[in-house]
Structure formats: C-alpha cells, structure tokens
Image (cartoon, rainbow, N blue to C red; front, side, top):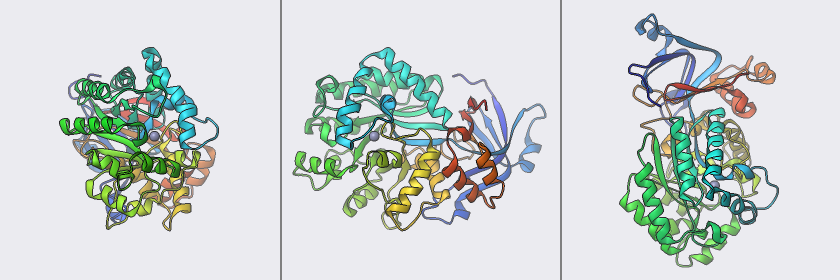
Length: 442
Ligand SMILES: [Zn+2]
C-alpha cells in the first residue's frame, strides 16, 4: 500500500492505552484513559495524541475527523502465537497434544504444499485477524517455503506488521512434512533474505518444538540465529506432561526442556516460546535472564487439557518473564484476543492466587505483546512516531453488553466487561498504518 504524502487523518473518542507495565507499576501510572481524546495519524504513523480540547485547535479546518461514540480507541491487539496452517482443524474433537498433532495437525499441514491453497487460507487468516482487531501476529507456517510466501504476501497486501517462519521439522512426523537439517537451513536462509525487513515483515526461525527436530537441525537453527541476529525465533515449550517426558528421553544430556533450546543458542530478546505451563523455577529464571518471551495461550491449553499457566508466577518481580497472549489457532478456539483474555482470567482463577486484572490482560494484548515481540518501539501504544495500528472497540456491541456497561463506574470495569463478554462483534473497526481496513457493518 502506498501512502500519499501528508496523508493526515484523525479519530475522536475515548482513548485507552498503556505507557508502562501494570504487573510492576500502579495502574494509575501506566494506563492512560482520555475520555474525549483525538488520535492524529500522518503517513501511517501517529502524529499526535491527547485530549480533544488541546488537539482540536491544532488541526486544519478541512481535516475530516471520524467520531466514535460509545467506543474505545486502543492500539491493535497482538497475537504472540498462532498457526495459520491450522485454521481448518479448529474445533477437532478430543485428544491431548501428541495425538492431536498426529491425528489432525500433521494431516492438515500437508495441504500447504499446494501454493494456491496456501494463498486462499492465508487470505482468509488475515481477514480473520482484522475482524478480531488483531493487527500483528507471530505465525507458524508449514514446512513448505511457499506457505511462508503465501502468508507474507497476504499480510503485505494489507500492510500488516507480521512475524512468520517456515516450520523446521526433520523427525517424528509424516515423511511428506519433513525437511532435513541442511534443506531447512537453506530454505529458511532464502526466506530471511527475501522477507525479513521487507515492508512490515519480520522472519522467525521456527523449529516446531524440540521433539520434531534432530540435534543437527537445532544446530542449523542456532547457526541461522547467529548469522541473522535481527531475526526472531519461535517455538513451543512445556505444554504437556507427556511431551516433557518425551523431550527428556530425546535429549538425555539436557538439564531441562529449556536447556535444549539454550544449548543451541536459540534463547534471547527475539525468541518467543509458547505455553510454558509446567516450567520449573530454574527455567523461569533462565527465561528472565535471557530476555526470552513466553506466549500464554489459555484457550488452547484448556482445549487440549494441557494445564493451567499461573501468569502471576511468570511475571513476579524478582525474575519477571516477558509475556504476551496467543490464540494458538487451531488448538486455540478463538481468533479473538478479547475471548483469549477472558479465558486467561478464568485460568488465573484456577491456577494461582492472583486473578488477572483487566488492566493486566489488556496490557498483555497490546503493549505487553509488543514488548514480548521486541517491537514496542514500533507498535503497541500511542505516542508520536509509532505505527498507527489501532482498533475501535464498541462497548455496546450487544444488548447485554450495553446493559452491563451502562452502569460501569470506571474504565477498568468497562475493560473487564469487554474481555468477559466481548468477541469479534465488539470490534467496530480495525486500522492498519492509519488506514481503516475493517469495519463492522453491524
Ligand atoms: Zn502452537
């Protein structure tokens, strides 16, 4: 998408965004709420943000201002872990992780050797993200390089900031899906050269998880990370007890699950590991020390019966682990980060002593997600110079929500109602780099 010079726009409504982390700061210091605010964008970036009475006199008389009453204007949601190639197996019945992979995932992903099919699903996937207010995602593709071209191609059409990578997998899966250490290195390298930094695309070196990569392949992944330090790494960790036992058998010399990735140089500020439900204290400490991020995927963890992540334990002050939220489609059951926040709240109720507050949940879905993905200098909040990816949330999206929000007494109460009762119907519009790409016709 090419933007005209001085393409200036303004939206007016209630602004809600974070400037800090409510896990270690008072909410009053880091959650900004401007009841009557204006966000001004120029050439895809944020030009100004603040109260309407300050901004209005600075605007040209002929500038159109789009007004959104009964709505919140917020940075776009960030999905820190998902698989576009698993859309078609959402809501497939039964089984825990390993059987689910064999029975559904490994069958579905083989279809992505067909480029036309990959294009069609990637197109649909990007539309679903926008419809759900998700403006950036960290995405697993299939083992086929064409499946990565398909996703980045569709994201580029919409000018979306996207992280994605080709799955590296050379054992313990059907032959049709396997690559080998050297081919996966070469294919990933070619994709990095083609896509990383092209428009808003970022590449992620993507070994699926320890059990499906040989030591030679993990070594190749580590080699890529060393050669291309600006590139991301994404994988899975400690989702399921049987999986953890399997990793122990496959890598008997490693101290723990995390040590497998650590040994091959795969941890760091640009690494995102999904799940981490059953991590030990030593592993949490190492995640924290290395700056590695964790993606919490509550709908998937519940669906596969994997367990309950204690998010309070992850974010605790003495060794905080950077966390974001992930939908983990297709084991995840919704594209909606609102629903994901709602399930994260319920999981926190069962898992630990500290229920996830609305402020903390929305932080995870916006600035926290951007921080986990090491891109808080680009997206996730509102300040001059950041990319203008934002959404309009309708606090009266359904009759029931309208009834409930009518007597809400604080912004935190409204946010909590949204995350418990909201879904894609609450997304009134989604803007990418200042352009409105989705509007809810209802
Ligand atoms: Zn996953």
